[in-house]
Length: 264
Ligand code: F6R
Image 1 (cartoon, rainbow, N blue to C red):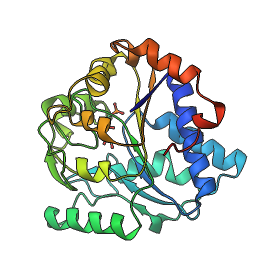
Image 2 (spheres, protein in one colour):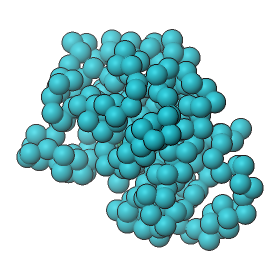
Image 3 (spheres, rainbow, N blue to C red):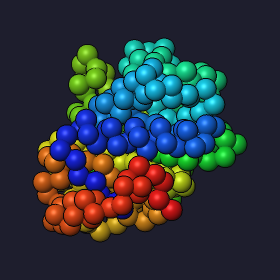
């Protein structure tokens, strides 16, 4: 995993936006994997700006979101459908038919997981996946103990995640218990990963993810096995990394061409 430490979330998000913009320009019909939550908001704002001011064209792009709350219909104010519409889709020229988010009110969640996996496969797989990380190490909503080979399915949120996400709801008890999420295996199948993590709250889990053992007790740690994964983090999130100075040195000595492009 490549670790890029930036002074601010804004600077890290700008790099992520450049990588995505380069991909969209190189491959206008690319498939993007998207995340929700607080972390990608600056990235989405920058992509919207690039669309508005730099003509970044999303008309042929397809997207797949990581997850959705079970029990929240797409039009629910706290659904991830609504989140994506309010924070990105309404600001870019993406076709609604090409945006995909698991259906949190599907009758049969097992069938929904299979259907979602089939849709990703039919789109040719995900070229680039944006990830945030839970303070407990989840990616998507693959909580601790998730099979590292798992596919899209229903999961039960931990008390920690429900507490972390309570800020998006009127009352803590309104946070749903269940989610439908891409699996760890689904995420590992994507061709490129950008993991974003900001703030001291994420420092402990980032150290475990980057420098700790690979274990289902910290599902994000499997990203060490992904061939093209980059962690874009701010200084506070880097405070518990034992080798932060080395990561900074590596990044500072990169040839310019390598910073913003897919590295294979
Ligand atoms: C969101 C998702 C989660 C979040 C994670 C961090 O679609 O899959 O893994 O990325 O919970 O959330 P924030 O960014 O709010 O700290």
